[in-house]
Amino acid sequence: MTVEQISVFLENTSGRLAEVAGVLADAGVNIRALSLADTAEFGILRLIVDQNDRAKQALKEGGFTVARTEVVALEVPDRPGGLARILRGLDDAGINVEYMYAFVRRSGDNAILVVRFDEPGNAVAALTRAGVRVLLGPELYAL
Image (cartoon, rainbow, N blue to C red; front, side):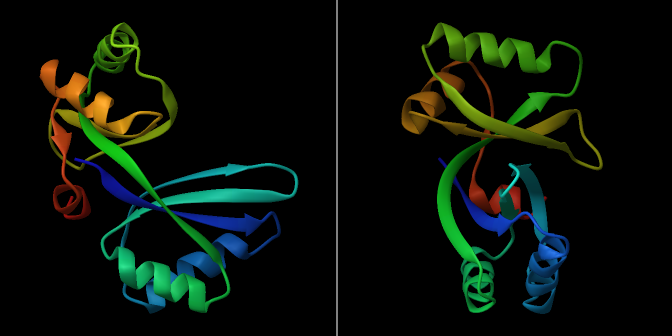
């Protein structure tokens, strides 16, 4: 129950992020969530998009270095303590979080958390046992 994430490696120069957004727009790809981390020389843009294959092809044709990563998307109660409860459960199960980012839907009681785990299968099992709703790719892409 993982979701495909696209990572794009960018030089840390003015306009590179706009180029990625333009390539995806021209390809008719909708960005559903993103995270950008940078250093002095480069950045890693992590994307959840509605059309993975089309996005990867367009970005590669545009000269970008693209990688595919499996992540887990889950619902988190959008209230104080919602994230803390889930993270405590993962810690109790010995699951390590490598990185994460979140977004809130336009309506609903839950936020969506996108997480990269060192052991995604064990993480999904632990989350499911704890009653956390793990989202499938099509559910996430359609939000």
